[in-house]
Structure formats: structure tokens, C-alpha cells
Image (cartoon, rainbow, N blue to C red; front, side):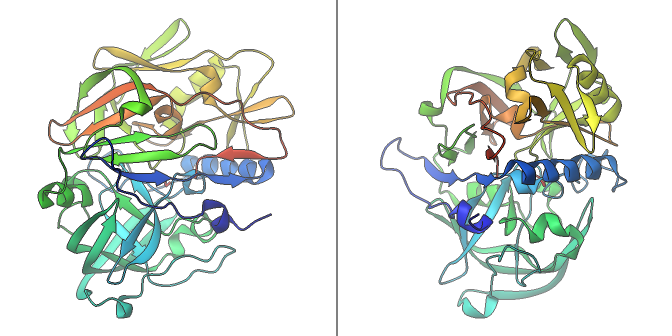
Length: 398
């Protein structure tokens, strides 16, 4: 089996000649065997159900952001320093800091390491950086250097050079993800400063303060577009929903539907998060959905009978129901058993990750503080046979 890193093949950044004003980051998915995916999902479910820093406070570090499921996230390439040093990062709408590693970790994947001594534009900063994930802390020190992606450059940007990644354990050491580039708002930035997208908006390099996520469901290229949206990736019109807070990309969740049944969301908020691979919700509410799906919880996963069609799950916000079809809930099939892309956690909020985002092309309107949802042009593809499947490569957290 080829190495995990080789399978990602670091995305090449290009500046398009068409669709004036748009700049793109191709996002690559990681190819995994079925057995590897099963083990990963088991770790995800168990981690989400374990004790972790309380995530209920909006504005606190988001415990799913790259902790539990980053083995299945979408990665893009950035360059840090002068000359540029390549890093594969999760463009994560559930956090607001940029951090990259400065030391290697033990594991089967060799990461791209940022070496400040090789950059002529590096400026040291003794301010300590620390962020807590469910498995433990990540820490280092802030610094300033040039950061480039999608043909744009943030000059002398303040970010974290991380030298302690032990808290993430195997979810990092066995993943091709080098770091995280947060795409949420300044309120979530650890250590002050501004978030990467806020800095990009202030730099004047965008035609409009908007970015759009297109997450494919097969081997075709996924894409993150800065400065607008790409009409090739959606059909129909956008449905716009105002944000309920400018922290996460967060909306007021009114209700959750499955078939003819529904319930009001107890917490009343949902976070649309490219850094979470699954749809994650409060354990009691997710258990109810699983029961309606005929699914059972087993070793961190929800398993359902594939011989029967699964009902869709819909989330209502902005007075509109956004459905995820039963077929789109399935992320693997093994011996006629479907593994579902839902998981419960000890928190009252909902996190609508990649499983929710794939059916929709989502426009993140920073200027007007709203989210736009349109039907994605990505076609549903039945998961491959059990010897080999493809799953997304996030940012969750993971």
C-alpha cells in the first residue's frame, strides 16, 4: 500500500484565468482500506463520547476541530516563510488560528516541518500558544512570517509554530495533516491577533469577502474558492441564512427531522464545520436518530442494514429544512452493513461536518455574516467494495 502522504499528493495551488477574481485551493482526499477506515471511525466515536473540555461555551476552543477525525479530512497546500515551505493543512471553519509543526512526531507518516531558520522573513515571538483538544493540548510559540495560499500572500502574519503535538497522539502521527488554518472569526482566535481570513480581507486581495466549499464524493477534485463562489459547483439559487453569532459559522437550529418525525433542537445552535468529518450531535438526540434509522451503536460506530433504504435527516434553520439523504449518510459498506456518518458527543450543540456539507455548495459570506446553501453538483457515488474505499481526507479535527 502506498504511503498515506503519497496518496494525498499535496494539492497544487493555482490562480484561475476564468471567473475573474476567484482564487482556488484544490482539496485532496485520502485513500484508505476498509479496515483502516473501520478502525478510524471506532476511535472517532469513542473519543467523542469520552470526557473532554466542555464545548458548550461558544467562543471556547472547539474540541472537534482536528482532534478525532482528521484522518478523514480534506487537505490543501500552503507555503510558509521565504522561500516558501510546503504545509498540508485543514482549512477549518471550526477554528480561527493557523498553526504548523516545527518538530517531527513518531509515526508512519513523515510531516512537512516548518523551519524558521530557513526563512528570511521570520520574526520570533516569545508569546506562548496553547490550544486544548479532546485528547490533550497542542502548544508552541507565536511568530510572524509570510504565509501564501491560492496565489495570495499574508505578509508578516502572526501564527503558531508548534513543537508539542503529543496531546493529539495517533490521530496526528498517522495522518498526513501537518497543521490547521482556521477559517472562523476573530472571536475564536487564541492569543489575540486576527484570523487568517480576516487578515486576507483586510489585505485587499479579494474582490469580495466570500469563500465557497465544494466537497466531492468521489475521486474528483474538491475545491475551496476565495473571493466569491464557483457556479460550476452548484445548481439553482442560494438560500441565505444569517449567522446567530460571529464566532463559529453558526446558525440557529430550529428542529431536526427524520422521516415523518422531528424534534426541537435542545441547544438551538448548529455549527457548520469543515473541520469535522461527521454529523455530530448530543448523544441522546443522535441515539434517537440512530434508532429511527434502524442503526445500532457498536465500537464507536453506528451500523445499519444496507438492504433497506435509509430515511433522510433534515436540519431546519432559517425556516428551511436542509436534508441529507440516507445514501449520503453512508460512508462505508462492509458485508451488507452500512457505517453511518453520524456520532454523538457529551455536548448540547450540533456540528454539521463534511457529511452534511457534501450535498451542498456552501458560500461563507464574511461581509454580510451569513451562510448560503445551494445544491452541490457533486454526484452521490456508492461506497466502493470492501477491499478499498475512499473517505474524506479535514479537517476535524477533527
